[in-house]
Length: 471
Image (tube, one colour):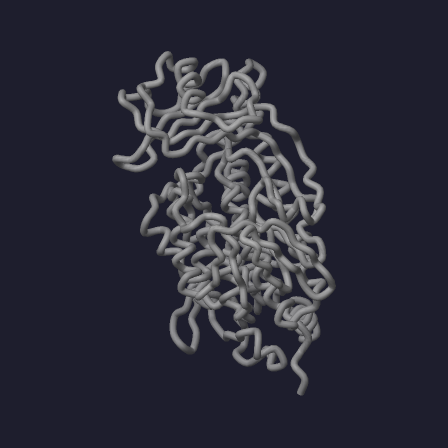
């Protein structure tokens, strides 16, 4: 995703990938949340994913939460396995002609004032202006940069496997004194997916088919004749976050910056959103449009988002415990989430629609996602997200046509005069006052809301998209 964002901005970008192709062992993560689908819609590629997945009008926090009344075109989650998500993204990046160095690892790097020398496992060295570690929870880039990874050690572990079975299993969820277990189909006619809570914490060794068989027998009394494993893994509730998302010319995104248990299906989603927050900022710094300090806003905006995710995943793990006190707590939480206000609030947080970057006081839109309105323009009907397909900022004038003059930024900010007469509604907040103008960042968040002074608009344009052009 990050490579795609940089390529759209005209930046020379390359991916170093240890796998020989886009084939992924196992299905891995299971879907996309509303805000991630919106982000893909902003780039004009959401339909590629929607056409291959299954829409569900719920998110999960302890219990399923209805999200169908949330004010977004995508008031649902999309059931689509990670192996398909990666393939579709790889096809998109291929259209953007991004260089990929396959079957190679980054083994080290050295940074100086002008760039980063990156060493690859085949002996090749690359010189780059910036290096972004998207290399997972065990990130070599994070460790080599000396960035601390504080958090909480694991207390529980789970086995996850995709296998064939000789016998029909007990489908669905099953709960016992150990915890919650599940058996389901990955796809029609495909392997069976098993998730088992282990009786004792295990994290040191790589699990085997024998481990899965023993765990199945302990829970179900049989292993259902499992064979032909496609993928076996183990995950824990270890929860950690990088102390800094940046060390000079080295940055972190996705699991390299934050790890947590996969309850609620948030990890892949906030990783994609990390990339979209970082991409346009890094592109502007590389191209000299904005000063290097713009990259500091990546940490200040995204670190709190992941911190909240870490908190809610820890809460969900606690609610899954099977002792009587945890069950009592779970019953109380279920009652609360049955009420509309708590349901809407938690559902918006889980889906990413409640994200609010602290960009100062002012209109409720400031720092929040721009709704995908149906606009009327001189060129005909137009959706807001369509304006963002090229990952460029947009000054949307909803007042008197021609009342805003952003000519000094016309080389990098698109100005659109439009009308919108419908209601303005945000997740959680509800109805808000209609603004006269909004400055929309390439990631779809509002950087400025119209006021009576042109000076404020100029200050916002300069802060986010560089100083005005000379002349």
